[in-house]
Image (tube, rainbow, N blue to C red; front, top):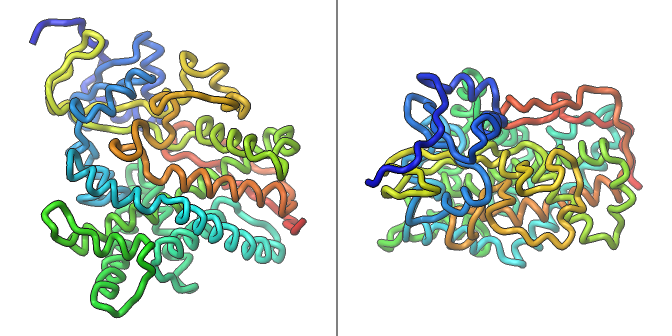
Length: 418
């Protein structure tokens, strides 16, 4: 390959500890230091290229240049993603599996999800009115776990709710973790896979029923490109790929409540007829607060980008948090300002809180629409259907801990229905 400009190189034999100590700012710190949207480092014992920004997103989501197979570290698959799920597929196999997920994102399905979210918030307010204090993050995850299971057609007994919610939460919390948090996530995934494998087996053998429009039905009977049903284990992984991300919306709901508290001027703008502002507010919560730090893929074939060589097999990380806070893409990126999304006409590569690119043909999260709709409904309840007080507490959140959440988990009290 023709010699080209050398990629800026981060010094050190392995920067894995630096990643753990810098968290969301690991890539942005070096983008600023090198004054470059690309640099090379070593993480987890291997060479890694980190890229950031809109142009980086465009190349990262080019299926001719990158593949997802082998990109996720074992520790992430063991806790968050599972084995043989859609995140690690490429080409026609990925497209076929992605079509399955997109078939669950119809307007009718989103309407069902919205009705379920309303139902759970109504019950939650009745419950919270009787409580001395409410830890919103924990309660939001409980709400979204019930929504997720009902939406997917998965039976959930009341006595199981807390255990299942904690397991989903542990899987999500294991991302970016080492030690106890990681091991808790692995144990939670093992329990959850056994549970869902049992559900799928009962459904396939006719001992359980489900509506044909639900995820349980569609995933259990989904055939691969060879016309074979997914193995029970793979079907369980994919069904968890519906359930777990919906539970993760509890974090966004908590950050939404934090934004309302820290920016009280937004309350008056979130009126019953202010659908456009609600949409802007939700998008700004997803842009501003830390959620996913980066995504990984491996180079499919040798290529050159911006006069830099990318060698086949190299792991590349796309900077999610840094792209959403890039001063090159966003005016006053470190300010919370929903109005920035008024008449916003960005591309699928500059606003990437849940990945970038095309929904149908690429690796952008199929559940992004679910996230937006569930957040809009939740905000409506937080602002229009209930009143509450926010006592003194530690509302700071770490930029090192991945994923992040306010330290107090956002406590409210004196909840009453409007």
